Length: 161
Image 1: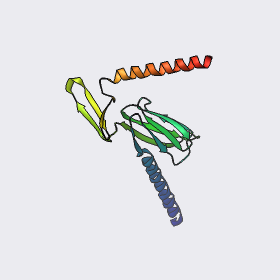
Image 2: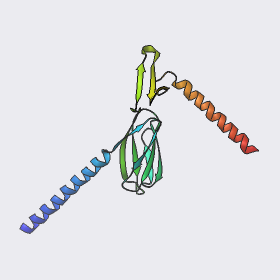
Image 3: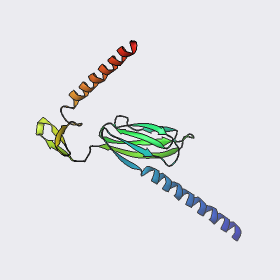
Image 4: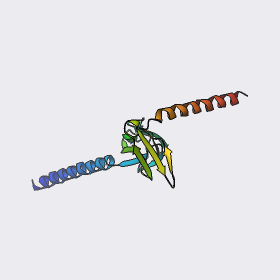
């Protein structure tokens, strides 16, 4: 009888410790966080190989699996999202919270009431920069799209020769 009790207690202890260890692994995987500056990129290194990468909101961050342990992350728009890496068996390798924000490196924002905001990058002289939230942003996006379209047309004409 005593032997059975000891065996049952040992089995119960093993079960409890494995549940606690599993919960700690999940908490550690969920606790991963990274910050990416808007319009800049960063690398996310994984401890285990991944086969697939999923981003919660592709408008905020763009991701690409470079190799089985390296993810390229591009900050596209201010906000928060997550990146999930999955192994070949469908198991979660990592779940990383991503915050995309403005650079805090020598940047000044001047708020101009109803006229919007002006951003300056000051290194060593202050120069005007345009970031999300500036009234000029839409015009710059349209101009950029026109330049891309023009370049694509030029490339198409060049390839026809």
